[in-house]
Image 1 (tube, rainbow, N blue to C red):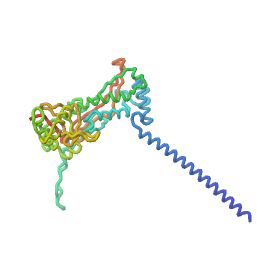
Image 2: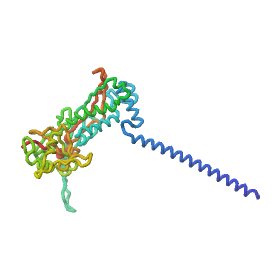
Image 3: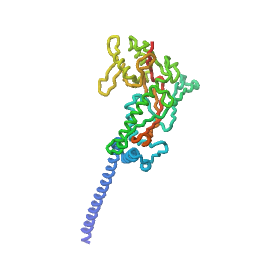
Image 4: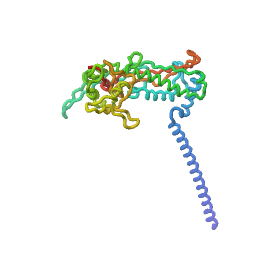
Length: 379
């Protein structure tokens, strides 16, 4: 019995050592699992943070590479279909999201009205929006008085006219065969430039027939917001049938204050460079310039405290024209577009050049006519 105590103590010591070893092994395994999970999360985070072009996620990179190498360079429909699942039966392949994002960003940089207006993405050819033209009626009553029924608000339907916008850039087969040629960058830039020029003109002067209805093509009136029909833009005269009168600042100030204060927050001037050259020379009665250049790089120049945007599709100063617009275009003009750009490769029409016929459906219309005001050259 005397040897039982040392033996039990020894067994207890062995048991403690074994438990300690097992605990250390468990801790090492747990740390290994944590490190592995952390590494995976870091990899996912780095992939998500990469830019769309030139550093897309792995799946997006495969799709983009397949689109460029198989379809754009060689026109291999079947090979590209197996990679992206696109269907040429709809009139062409959908441009991968990376290229389409670059086109949209470049359009916003080039087309000034697009940068100012409200843009919505639609999935079908038609788009409709209800706009209330009068708020719900209200009234004051006593604590126990009856609550009579209030009048219902009035609504107007906005259905922006739309059309098919297309571009048809071409490249030689030798350029496409050159692996060093940045095909996706060139294609995105060419399509964006063509689209920007066409839609920039349509958002200002579009007829509404197979194209957007430009805000200068909308009905106009001298009447104020309270009595003017919905969808009709208000304008004021310049005071001179050929240009500006002796007090141009008073006309511009009147134009600013015909707009409700809520819309003036975020409003800007829109005119072309020729009109801008005249406006920059305008002075007040005491000799001060109305124009205020931006004091910080990247800050827009201002006129009466509001930024000025150059849109070359605005008319020059001439009798009967509307060379200057002042408005909150995000509230005043709506652009509805189908997001996906379609592209059809055409190597046959103009050999040895390969054409890339790109299409996109775009519509536009004045949304709130109280948010855009015009200056007309008239006495």
